[in-house]
Amino acid sequence: MRKIFLSIFVAILMLMMPIVSSTNHLNNNEKNINESNVKNPIFKINQTQNILLDNFIAIKFDGEEEVQANTIKNNIINSNLEINMIELALAANVYNPQPIDMNKLIDLDTFKINVGSWDELNQLIEDNWKVENNQIINELFGDLIDYIVGLIKGRLGWVYILFKDGIKLVEDGIDLFIEIIQPMILQIAVYLVAVVNLIIAIPQLFKDMITELFSGDYEEFIDTIIDYKDETAQTITEIINFVNDIINNQKISNYLYNVTDFISWFDSNPWEDPIHISGQVIQNFGFLSGATVSCKNSEDITDENGEFSFTVQYQPSSDSIPANKSYGLHKCIISVSKDGETLKQSKDLLSYAFSGGYITWTFIVIKGKNKILSLKNLIQRIFTNIFELIQTIFQKIKLFNNTPLFR
Image 1 (cartoon, rainbow, N blue to C red):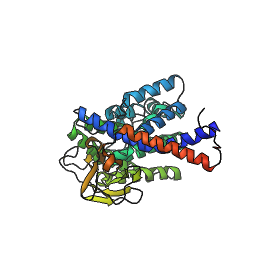
Image 2 (cartoon, one colour):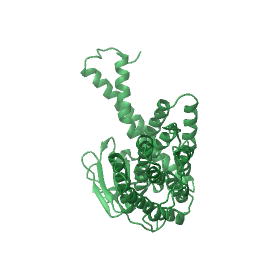
Image 3 (cartoon, rainbow, N blue to C red):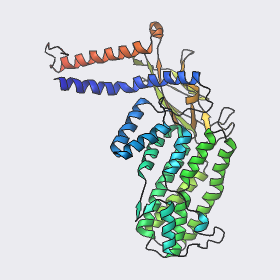
Image 4 (tube, rainbow, N blue to C red):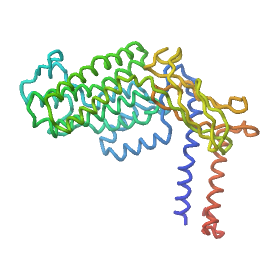
């Protein structure tokens, strides 16, 4: 019986965790923002995400590797669960394959290959791509970095898509080299390696962009994006067109198509996509329906579950980072109001997102006589309701039988 009780208790705790952690999340953020002079937006995970990350490390790593993984995590995420974006970007670059100097592969003006033998090509790949004996090495911590980046993918928007799809093309390209390209003639192999090699520069691009943005080098941030779009993307397209004329292999053709599709996406200015806003408004242990939730010139009305969802067109303005540029982070403070009264707003430094991203926010509104209710009392009432629910469940399933719940 005690096991049954504990199972139900844990299950209900897990269901209630998003509410409690959202409350802590907002109050801690308010304290941190008021007490610091941080000018850059804050990227932060919540307690639930932190638990999932710890579980990921415990399952994925063992022994010394687990110690190293936790060290990497602690360098990136501080005790307030705030992410050091520059450290994250640096790690994304370190724990992923590195591009080969393109001049060692081909002459980009004439497309003449500069590699004299398979031994020379394989050595370049082993030294840079982290491939050894036809296997990708050192990818373990790369998985950890990818996981952490994924935790904040919403606010990263188009930058996350660039990183995620770039990494996927890197992995597919290296697998393609190992399985198919190696048996081919050297000349064709070098061209295909050059395509994969240019995609491998994505982690470096991610590192440069984030480092420049969060260290205040806004003009460099924009130049990095434009250089990749105008130079690297164009070079990849030219090489692919050249290779397509001399090769006939379905797997390679499919890969080149995926690369072309990726470049076309980047060329479509994804930093002009709308930002998606969603979340829920909770009031005194119920859901607040009929409230207006807005950001800039867009809004939605909460439904019977207090939920809202709408999109905001990118609007570069003076409070964008960089100012008045579409490439960077856009401020979108979310407000919830009803009957002409503003009830809550999202926190300033947590209200930035890249275009194409999303911000999810849970508002907890305390109204009327309960307005002075402290967080401590709020949580206490939540647990009181939990115990009442447990007691009701036991009564309904006839397991209670006047037996004391605790001994």
